[in-house]
Length: 112
Length: 116
Image 1 (tube, each protein chain N blue to C red):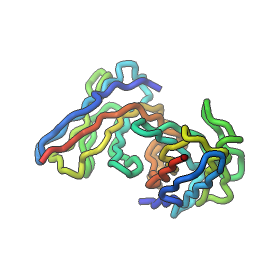
Image 2: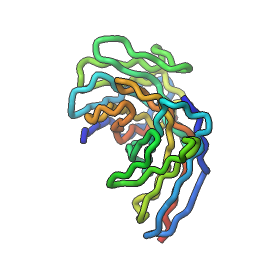
Image 3: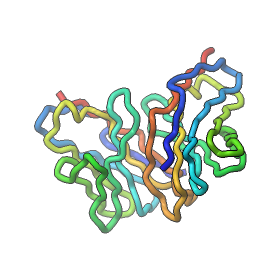
Image 4: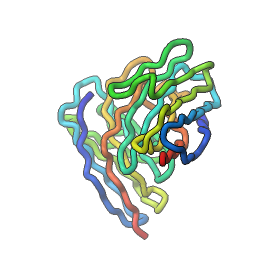
């Protein structure tokens, strides 16, 4: 699995877009980018994933660069409840569920 | 979405004792996973629990210390044996989401263990 690098922490003003970067320069062609977050005192929560196209769902957008060496998770209108640790995970997709490998993640603090 | 519950939510235990943590999923799943999250740290996978077979442990974790049961497709237990203060952590279980995406998983709320 490719190694990922994320900033340790970031702040964002409430109502503004939060842009969380992730570097995965050694990603291979069959590896997906997954994002999870962990709100304090809760278990991690799946947010979004992508292979090479940009993806959007009700929670966030995922922008993957053309060379796939980095990606950005975008929370379009951050709220105080988005304060959490955000994990970028790169994994080879397979036909059955597999275990996740969590790095250090980015602590996002949304400020009022 | 699947709901995963864990019992107990927290406990304070004396060193040398054992604690069994229960994980209940509201749908049938083939695989369940147990993670440990030490204070201020990220999650580390302990083992994968498959129904009908022995659990598969990650490097650094052994069955004698963390025995796992998987009696059916909705339930699993993790026992932390002969505890020491270094075992103070949050223990989480997870299971694959019904979406079928390989790495979309639901997590339980965790069990916060303090060993004194």
